[in-house]
Image (cartoon, rainbow, N blue to C red; front, top):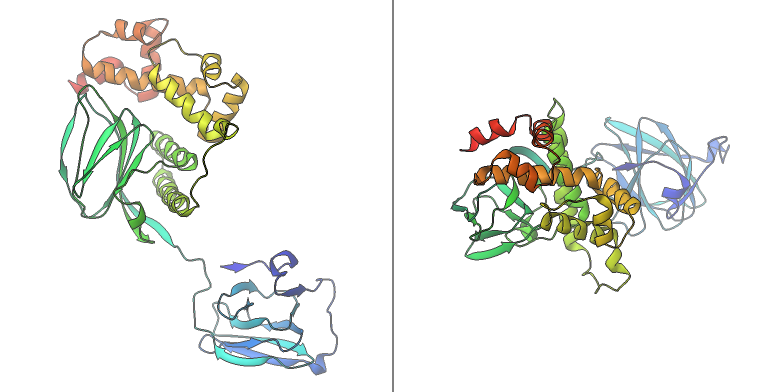
Length: 381
């Protein structure tokens, strides 16, 4: 990627002249460096070397070791420090040239291999095939499949067994697994457990996801937040939503790869137990396990040992919703499971979830899912 040429970025290689004036008016001492797409030699500065852009869109590539180069757009005069390797090359044009001025001419070395100076993807999701929020009945059993797409599963509620390559992984709330292309896999839940989970199938270009495949992943909060944003984007679908979801999935996978390569986390101290992620996780677990109780933001905040205002700030920062809205959404998700179980009528469900009236429950259900509880019940029975 071509970087902006300023003193902060260029500090390890030399200095950038002020743009208000030239550092040298001795044009008769300047020498010409010409470069083309096929011939862009590498030089090493034998003394401090002033470099001036002359014609064309010119890229200056610099390195302290001759192998790892950084690329800058040569739109200012620079003084390259003695010993630094440098190369000038045209940017999306046949040729370019620059002048230099130095006590000792730079030493010409081998040519730098041609390369695209534009930003390149290390990893990119190219196609999104399915994006489902799955709400399964108790003890559900999926007999298995394999397909050429990669697949990601994230457990939002309950627990789920993931079986692939003879390994049975138990995924708890907040866990994730990724299956490789053409990897046979199956999923099931224990008796009495009705899991809710996200399933995404997609194609990928670039980096290999092998380090993440078929293992239980405890994603960092940043990855979970991205997934929640993707779900909200899916709810409002407009002409840009698919592009946004694909971009967010790419960032999510990059976040997982970066997190996987990070040094092992040290044992938590008593102070770190109250990190932002830990507070949010504990709040989510408490809400999930007490979803049929009368919940309030102050009550949840008290359970995780923070103030209501601090909990609200954390939810807004990391989840982009208030804890009150999160509670409302979780209660409505629970109501869908209760409707599928068909053991209570709507009045009883509303009462069990602590709604003031069945009309209040029905109105919120319609606002969230776009259909009434009655319409939903007909669709699942």
